[in-house]
Length: 136
Image (cartoon, rainbow, N blue to C red; front, side, top):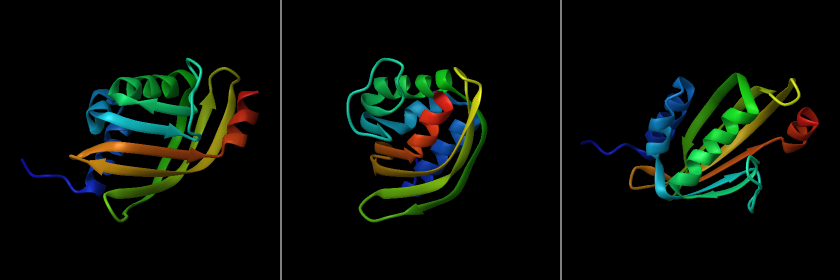
């Protein structure tokens, strides 16, 4: 089996996510992954922003996204290789916040570290002030 480039791993993640193939998305996370959604640290059950550890918690991360938002648009503007197995991506999205019915628009940046053909570290940054406003 041909080894995927680091950039191809992240492209595969976005492709699977866009198709709603969450099983494939989960396979792309390393079993000992570390996910940071906007801020490092503990989070309450159902809260999106914070840290997730392991593939099992990656499943919680994906469930929290699905429970909180209805995605109206999600654009990946670029994906680029960095140094030392790092891949960067950025783009924009519009989500409907299910609890309030308000739209949440943000640009975003993602930084991944790839190990063994999987996402070992995943950091996603968005306009958290815009989220708080749409969620209030």
